[in-house]
Image (cartoon, rainbow, N blue to C red; front, side):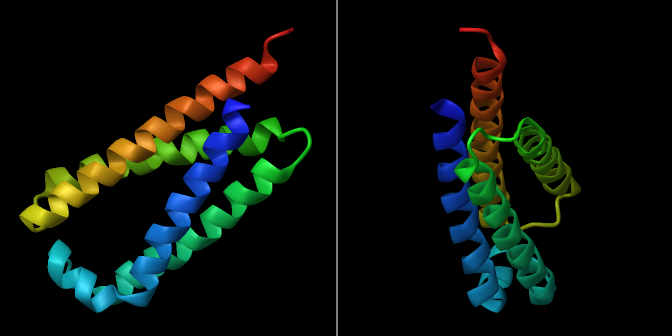
Amino acid sequence: MLLRSTLVINGVSTALCGLALLLAPTALAGLLGVSAPALLAAVGAGLVLYAAGLFWTARRQPIPGGAAWAAVVMDFGWVLGSIALIELGILSSLGTGLVALVAAAVFVFAVLQLVGLRQTTRPA
């Protein structure tokens, strides 16, 4: 099922990004051009929690529609926040590229989750 697999893949990539931010906030702050490593660690912790929510949602039988919709909305919110961050111009060139790359991946997850939700609500 498209929705379940997308939630799991989204969860894995989100957990990996979150762990990277938690384990190396100072090094990543320098690369990204962020002056507050603690902020990156906080975002990392939030991403790990979000990944847990994605895994929880993917394991339910059936997948709760409200939780799946929440993932779609939060992923689109991440994309909009990333665009705003890029537009502020405060990141390094590498940081801008990485934020844009992650935003593109999150956009794909949001769209696939939306398509998967539509498939699950369509009568057979």
